[in-house]
Length: 400
Image 1 (tube, rainbow, N blue to C red):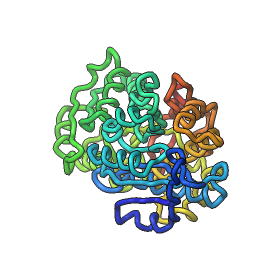
Image 2 (image 1 turned 45 degrees about the vertical axis):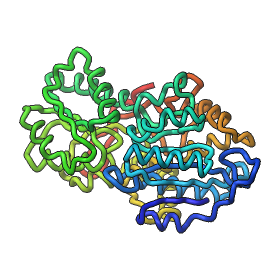
Image 3 (image 1 turned 30 degrees about the vertical axis):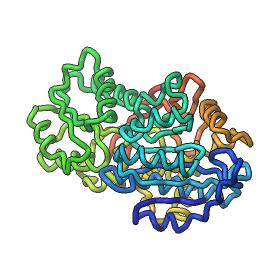
């Protein structure tokens, strides 16, 4: 397996990767001898660099798979590029992967704006844009975009669940919302308002920030001044940590909801301050390694052993590393199902034919199902509250 990254922090991972085989004339796209070429794009640098660990975990998992014999006798070669969470760079990297590296597909490209930038291109080229690392609802549109599929629960479904919880438990809430001013933030906000329905007037203030902003301190001051007693924090990790810390330091103590993609203890809550994060509410669909419920769980113990062997520098408290491990299992399952027919069309067909697939690290009761008309693999979550040390799940699994 070869891992080609463009950041210094990833040099170790690159050094662990083996050489790639040259694609021979006449071989189909994505096949080079006994290797399957998979493209990957991740923000190893820039404002969303906290997510870079996902790419490293996936690379480590594929290394593990290769050492165990590969998939159907073939090795997985992931070529990963850094786009710094910049859509123009994403376009450049996608073109390089498709037109120069001749990959079979692009797996887990991260972020709503970056994926939006290559959405039409990937479908025009008929190259799978598979299991994108963003929960935007638009990835579930097989009729218009048959080559693009999401993976995680969509943002609007998650936001609806927060809204329903507020209506049920705090019917007189005054809500403030901070959101990233792009498709990612607006998708969450739309779902949240839809979930509130006739109660949307409960929102007393909503403020946006740009991904290029150094901090969200001024936005947080505006939200606090609104008199809100409930706060929906729609941010990426860097800004989520800032918002949590600023709310505490300023003495504002609202009921605080933080979106799932920024609920990592390692990359968000620890920098913000674990004591300052007590009472936060989020959703989960993957087992949290810090949850004592999983202390003796075989799947989590296997993940810990995997991390120690294949990604020893990885943070065992960073939920993104569990995420990368879980989504990589899904990619391997699709390749297994594809058998000897590794055409792009068949790989996409298999991705749309997952039936009750349960990666070992999904929460109990949550399974992956897809079809030709449903490109939303995971559609269930469970609410959780942070107690100062770990997330405590509560209530039932919600969704489909």
